[in-house]
Image (cartoon, rainbow, N blue to C red):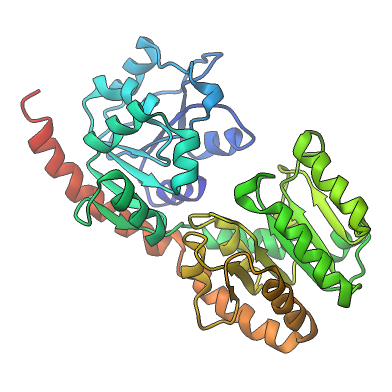
Length: 381
């Protein structure tokens, strides 16, 4: 969403952001758009915006069920004369219900698969969204098929819009990283092969599988290093993972780094990227790894990522076949030329996800569906 808002600002399209909870990206959002905080404490907002606008809702978390949009804040949003709402997650039914008095059409940009939908949405809120939505953009074909199969949507009211990135911003950040210094800070030799992973420390992301793959690779290639970004320093899951690392005697070769900060510093140091997710719609990190010219390995039947990896790269591994994943990593670790060739392929695929390529498609579809919805659904109000 930050990539999208940045691009829209650069192209003269003004936006507003309804934010359901705070987080580390808040200052970045405030630099590119007007932020309406639907969480305590309320703060005064800057002046309203006019013209064609996209409003976005942040990811709703179960702990944020008490978030409310006050009448005053609702009026401020109304005074900005927005034309429609785009919710960047299926988990914001509560906020969309509270925005209903604005009588604005809304679209969903869904990145969640079934496990996440069950965790982060409530049945009544989900039913409201899917009944009233004008159009559903899906982060991958896997997301689209899940919504059609399990939630009654159709090919007519859904379309695939893969995850989008502001490629120049990411390339600039990656190029600015002092890779040698970052590796030195982690105690990794400059010429060592580094296998990367990234994501929350949860079952769906497969951090436990990443450790098991690392162990198999290290059995035959002990000079390889593994780095996962996204494991908090404290908490039960972190303790469990470090418990396993110690008993596998590979803690010196596997780094579990906390989320936050400039994680691209670590991505810039990867030679390979492994997506050990059991279920993932189409994560941005595979695109970031592609911009870093890293081969990306993932499991079949694990969501939308196999569409990006493709069957032509040799990097698509049978679901949870850890031996096959380990073998693939080992072969690429030994073959710098092949890593470079595949890295070029993934770089080109990542570049196709640039905002300048995908956002015009989004806006064109919004023009169509919002105009139709406004005429039919809201014309008599």
